[in-house]
Image: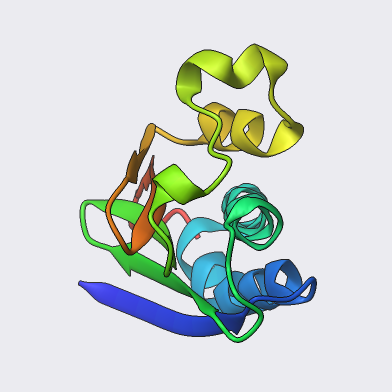
Length: 130
């Protein structure tokens, strides 16, 4: 299993740092188009954590990517998701574009409530596609 992990600041630069973290790692495995989609979804979730996570200024957001049978991206924040403004799957029609991007590219996605709060998504991994 391949793993990548990075702590990101609770800052407006966190989404771009998430994309940068996933850059070469994903492109080599998935090809540029699929990597772009995965980076977009990850940066949207990180941006949501910054904007809606009810985090303190010095809190970090942890981005983790794993590759086994699927590519799984997790975004972890200190606070439980019940303290955040989380839009559930049933609210996609009324939500911003972020979770719609995740819903479109992910095979499946979800949340883990208790502290730390985690939003995750998985996409199919086809070795050799990159």
